[in-house]
Image 1 (cartoon, rainbow, N blue to C red):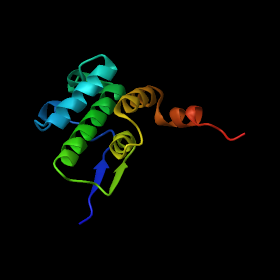
Image 2 (cartoon, rainbow, N blue to C red):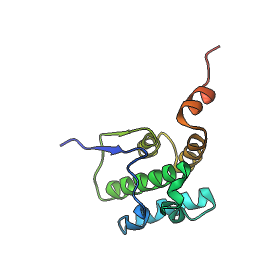
Image 3 (cartoon, one colour):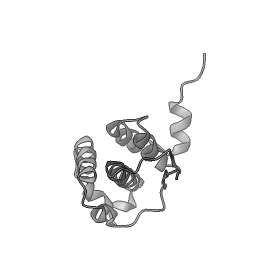
Length: 128
């Protein structure tokens, strides 16, 4: 059987979602790594108040997606493919090993602040 991990974008968030993740060492390590990169406890980002910010929403989605994916992989569930919708693309890229998590956190913060349309236009390298 083929397995794919699919990561949703903004709109799939639920207040408190980071607090209901599985009690698994891979999830705990992921949350710690995101918190270390942010220099802030990622668990502060999933309150209704925090979710007023696109940055908080997208960082919480990244942490949630990567944490669960890592837990599944640690338990032997290996995806043959990963895909993400909008902000979920960053969790897919981290899970696929294209980005490390710290870089994913920095890119999500930047893109959430600037908006996808500005991020892709201003940050793409143009051919000579």
